[in-house]
Length: 210
Image (cartoon, rainbow, N blue to C red; front, side, top):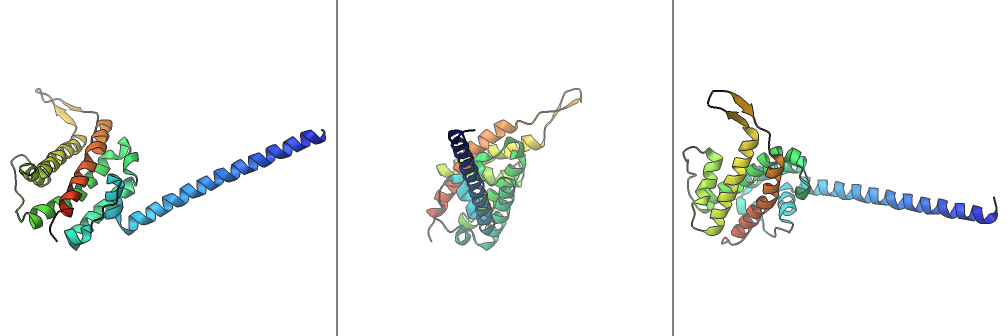
Protein backbone atom coordinates (compact mmCIF):
# COMPACT_ATOMS: atom_id res chain seq x y z
CA UNK A 1 0.00 0.00 0.00
CA UNK A 2 1.52 3.31 -1.07
CA UNK A 3 1.42 6.64 0.75
CA UNK A 4 -1.45 7.98 -1.35
CA UNK A 5 -3.66 5.00 -0.53
CA UNK A 6 -2.93 5.34 3.19
CA UNK A 7 -3.74 9.05 3.01
CA UNK A 8 -7.08 8.28 1.31
CA UNK A 9 -7.97 5.72 3.96
CA UNK A 10 -7.19 8.17 6.75
CA UNK A 11 -9.34 10.80 5.06
CA UNK A 12 -12.25 8.34 4.71
CA UNK A 13 -11.88 7.30 8.36
CA UNK A 14 -11.90 10.95 9.40
CA UNK A 15 -15.03 11.61 7.31
CA UNK A 16 -16.84 8.61 8.84
CA UNK A 17 -15.89 9.76 12.35
CA UNK A 18 -17.19 13.25 11.58
CA UNK A 19 -20.49 11.90 10.20
CA UNK A 20 -20.99 9.64 13.21
CA UNK A 21 -20.26 12.54 15.52
CA UNK A 22 -22.83 14.77 13.77
CA UNK A 23 -25.38 11.96 13.86
CA UNK A 24 -24.81 11.46 17.57
CA UNK A 25 -25.23 15.20 18.13
CA UNK A 26 -28.56 15.12 16.29
CA UNK A 27 -29.75 12.20 18.43
CA UNK A 28 -28.76 13.99 21.64
CA UNK A 29 -30.35 17.26 20.51
CA UNK A 30 -33.57 15.45 19.57
CA UNK A 31 -33.61 13.64 22.92
CA UNK A 32 -33.08 16.88 24.87
CA UNK A 33 -35.83 18.61 22.89
CA UNK A 34 -38.26 15.80 23.71
CA UNK A 35 -37.28 15.87 27.39
CA UNK A 36 -37.76 19.65 27.54
CA UNK A 37 -41.15 19.21 25.90
CA UNK A 38 -42.19 16.62 28.48
CA UNK A 39 -40.99 18.83 31.32
CA UNK A 40 -42.90 21.83 29.96
CA UNK A 41 -46.03 19.73 29.50
CA UNK A 42 -45.97 18.49 33.09
CA UNK A 43 -45.33 21.94 34.52
CA UNK A 44 -48.36 23.50 32.82
CA UNK A 45 -50.36 20.91 30.88
CA UNK A 46 -53.26 23.27 30.19
CA UNK A 47 -51.12 25.83 28.38
CA UNK A 48 -48.94 23.23 26.66
CA UNK A 49 -51.97 21.32 25.36
CA UNK A 50 -53.77 24.46 24.16
CA UNK A 51 -50.75 25.98 22.43
CA UNK A 52 -49.70 22.69 20.83
CA UNK A 53 -53.09 22.47 19.12
CA UNK A 54 -53.63 26.07 18.07
CA UNK A 55 -49.92 26.45 17.20
CA UNK A 56 -49.73 29.86 18.85
CA UNK A 57 -49.28 31.33 22.33
CA UNK A 58 -52.63 31.67 24.05
CA UNK A 59 -51.69 35.02 25.63
CA UNK A 60 -54.57 34.70 28.10
CA UNK A 61 -54.68 33.71 31.77
CA UNK A 62 -57.18 30.84 31.76
CA UNK A 63 -56.39 30.05 35.39
CA UNK A 64 -57.79 33.46 36.31
CA UNK A 65 -60.56 33.35 33.70
CA UNK A 66 -61.87 29.91 34.65
CA UNK A 67 -61.09 29.86 38.33
CA UNK A 68 -58.97 27.28 40.11
CA UNK A 69 -61.42 24.35 40.18
CA UNK A 70 -62.31 24.40 36.48
CA UNK A 71 -58.69 25.09 35.55
CA UNK A 72 -57.26 22.22 37.63
CA UNK A 73 -59.82 19.77 36.27
CA UNK A 74 -59.10 20.83 32.69
CA UNK A 75 -55.35 20.60 33.34
CA UNK A 76 -55.74 17.00 34.52
CA UNK A 77 -57.58 16.10 31.31
CA UNK A 78 -54.94 17.94 29.26
CA UNK A 79 -52.16 15.97 30.95
CA UNK A 80 -53.94 12.71 30.14
CA UNK A 81 -54.11 13.73 26.47
CA UNK A 82 -50.43 14.71 26.50
CA UNK A 83 -49.47 11.35 28.00
CA UNK A 84 -51.28 9.69 25.10
CA UNK A 85 -49.68 11.96 22.49
CA UNK A 86 -47.64 15.12 23.16
CA UNK A 87 -47.77 16.37 19.57
CA UNK A 88 -51.31 16.94 18.28
CA UNK A 89 -50.38 16.93 14.60
CA UNK A 90 -48.65 13.57 14.97
CA UNK A 91 -51.68 12.02 16.59
CA UNK A 92 -52.04 8.45 15.36
CA UNK A 93 -55.32 6.96 14.18
CA UNK A 94 -54.72 4.02 16.53
CA UNK A 95 -54.82 6.16 19.66
CA UNK A 96 -57.47 8.65 18.57
CA UNK A 97 -60.24 7.06 20.61
CA UNK A 98 -58.58 7.43 24.01
CA UNK A 99 -57.25 10.87 23.13
CA UNK A 100 -60.62 12.19 21.97
CA UNK A 101 -62.41 11.01 25.11
CA UNK A 102 -60.11 13.11 27.28
CA UNK A 103 -59.88 16.00 24.82
CA UNK A 104 -63.66 16.40 25.02
CA UNK A 105 -63.43 16.33 28.82
CA UNK A 106 -60.86 19.12 28.62
CA UNK A 107 -63.26 21.28 26.62
CA UNK A 108 -66.21 20.28 28.82
CA UNK A 109 -64.60 22.15 31.71
CA UNK A 110 -64.43 25.35 29.66
CA UNK A 111 -67.92 24.91 28.18
CA UNK A 112 -69.46 24.21 31.58
CA UNK A 113 -67.75 27.26 33.05
CA UNK A 114 -69.02 29.41 30.20
CA UNK A 115 -72.62 28.21 30.53
CA UNK A 116 -72.79 28.43 34.32
CA UNK A 117 -70.44 31.29 35.23
CA UNK A 118 -70.45 33.54 32.17
CA UNK A 119 -73.96 33.06 30.78
CA UNK A 120 -75.23 32.30 34.31
CA UNK A 121 -77.51 29.59 32.93
CA UNK A 122 -78.41 26.17 34.28
CA UNK A 123 -77.26 23.38 31.94
CA UNK A 124 -80.26 22.05 30.04
CA UNK A 125 -81.22 18.43 29.53
CA UNK A 126 -82.36 17.40 26.05
CA UNK A 127 -84.26 14.25 25.05
CA UNK A 128 -82.02 11.52 23.65
CA UNK A 129 -78.87 13.38 24.74
CA UNK A 130 -76.61 12.79 27.71
CA UNK A 131 -75.31 15.57 29.94
CA UNK A 132 -72.24 16.22 27.77
CA UNK A 133 -74.10 16.41 24.47
CA UNK A 134 -76.83 18.50 26.10
CA UNK A 135 -74.23 21.16 26.91
CA UNK A 136 -73.14 21.23 23.28
CA UNK A 137 -76.75 21.51 22.11
CA UNK A 138 -77.28 24.40 24.48
CA UNK A 139 -74.43 26.27 22.81
CA UNK A 140 -75.59 25.36 19.30
CA UNK A 141 -78.91 27.08 19.99
CA UNK A 142 -77.26 30.43 20.70
CA UNK A 143 -77.70 33.28 18.25
CA UNK A 144 -74.02 34.24 18.48
CA UNK A 145 -72.40 32.60 15.48
CA UNK A 146 -69.19 31.51 17.23
CA UNK A 147 -71.02 29.83 20.10
CA UNK A 148 -73.38 28.10 17.70
CA UNK A 149 -70.51 26.74 15.60
CA UNK A 150 -68.64 25.55 18.71
CA UNK A 151 -71.74 23.66 19.81
CA UNK A 152 -72.28 22.08 16.38
CA UNK A 153 -68.65 20.93 16.09
CA UNK A 154 -68.62 19.51 19.61
CA UNK A 155 -71.81 17.58 18.90
CA UNK A 156 -70.14 16.12 15.81
CA UNK A 157 -66.98 15.15 17.70
CA UNK A 158 -69.07 13.64 20.49
CA UNK A 159 -71.01 11.52 17.99
CA UNK A 160 -67.76 10.37 16.36
CA UNK A 161 -66.44 9.30 19.74
CA UNK A 162 -69.66 7.42 20.45
CA UNK A 163 -69.45 5.62 17.11
CA UNK A 164 -65.99 4.38 18.08
CA UNK A 165 -67.31 3.12 21.40
CA UNK A 166 -70.61 1.61 20.26
CA UNK A 167 -70.08 -0.34 17.05
CA UNK A 168 -72.84 -2.93 17.13
CA UNK A 169 -75.38 -3.08 14.30
CA UNK A 170 -78.61 -4.93 15.11
CA UNK A 171 -80.56 -6.37 12.18
CA UNK A 172 -84.34 -6.73 11.99
CA UNK A 173 -84.10 -10.46 12.76
CA UNK A 174 -82.12 -9.80 15.94
CA UNK A 175 -78.72 -10.78 14.55
CA UNK A 176 -75.81 -8.48 15.37
CA UNK A 177 -72.64 -7.32 13.67
CA UNK A 178 -69.59 -5.55 15.11
CA UNK A 179 -68.68 -2.70 12.76
CA UNK A 180 -65.10 -1.80 11.94
CA UNK A 181 -63.97 1.44 13.62
CA UNK A 182 -63.26 4.32 11.26
CA UNK A 183 -60.19 5.59 13.05
CA UNK A 184 -58.73 7.41 10.05
CA UNK A 185 -61.94 9.31 9.36
CA UNK A 186 -62.23 10.34 13.01
CA UNK A 187 -58.61 11.50 13.13
CA UNK A 188 -59.01 13.64 10.00
CA UNK A 189 -62.11 15.29 11.43
CA UNK A 190 -60.49 15.87 14.83
CA UNK A 191 -57.34 17.45 13.34
CA UNK A 192 -59.48 19.70 11.15
CA UNK A 193 -62.14 20.78 13.66
CA UNK A 194 -60.81 20.49 17.23
CA UNK A 195 -58.35 23.41 16.80
CA UNK A 196 -61.22 25.58 15.52
CA UNK A 197 -63.10 25.04 18.79
CA UNK A 198 -60.08 25.98 20.93
CA UNK A 199 -59.36 29.08 18.84
CA UNK A 200 -62.99 30.21 19.02
CA UNK A 201 -63.18 29.66 22.79
CA UNK A 202 -59.94 31.58 23.28
CA UNK A 203 -61.29 34.50 21.26
CA UNK A 204 -64.52 34.51 23.28
CA UNK A 205 -62.70 34.49 26.63
CA UNK A 206 -60.27 37.20 25.57
CA UNK A 207 -63.23 39.44 24.73
CA UNK A 208 -64.90 38.99 28.13
CA UNK A 209 -64.82 42.05 30.39
CA UNK A 210 -62.29 41.89 33.22
